[in-house]
Image 1 (tube, rainbow, N blue to C red):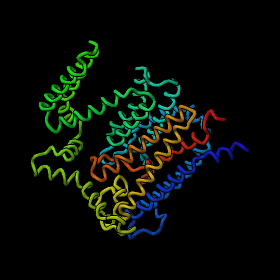
Image 2: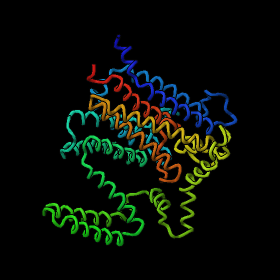
Image 3: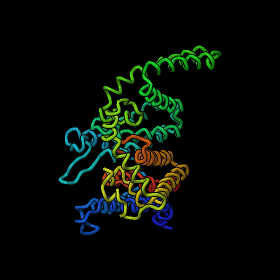
Length: 428
């Protein structure tokens, strides 16, 4: 049997089918959300659905190219690809185009490209390469710091644009590190800081500090009373660090966060007591979510039917072809349609994790887990944002939302793993 035939047989056709189903359903909903009376056909490039069809066609070219390249290429040149990704982010400071307050795009005529979408692929490759080179679980502090540097450098550059949504996605990599042996203390620290931040905003730094001090001292005297002196000291230092963080929350909130970030926290946590100011914030930042919830709720069980969504056709929900594309699914296809879309995403995620665990190469396994983590983060945050569980942060729904950079980035991300999986490095 020839090498080519053997490779074709090893391709994960099920993952490819799920990809094409999601892209196809996404395009159908983009068409419904964006078509106008002036449209002249499916290939009308003046319409968003026409442009998206072009992006889908070019994605097919990318898929063929990715699957044609030798699998070892991605591991061998991962460092160069990562550096190129960082340079593309740095270049935005000089050559970037400002759109909606963020300098996140390069513009070539009417064509724009967002390098942050491709930087995720570069980071996945670099992290997978580093973890595969050390060939051990990352218990060593130096290995942990290098991993953190690989992960955190791109979002630091992205925050300069500023684009908080794209930067947030990089938190997904810490789940990959946990799979590869990162001590769970880091996840607990992250969770604790987020919890303390929210509690402090909600009840104030005085109440939060006193409550943390009481709970911390009780824990130290009950659970660490018989512990070694070093452990008691570490627990006490952790308590001091927690209270110090609480005291710094107000400064971070009012001096580091932008006004629109503060308004979104104010809306979600109900921090504003003045009903006039709260209503003003709600109209500004809660409008998208309120309209999205109304649109999805109006779809009922079966939905109103394709192109029959009154709120979709009436353009009630801003950004309905990009970040809020899921509202079109909810209104026109109802509970059944949204359930099918969620099922397809979950099935794809589970499929990727299953194939990742089967890899003989650590590089391929880490890469597969990273793909699943990024897709899950986008999927969970986007849908949570649309139904009001999370504030609006500008995270697209993979394979669904309109945009060439997003579709190409997710396509490259997924199909490099399909290539690695089909090749089964070190198996031949």
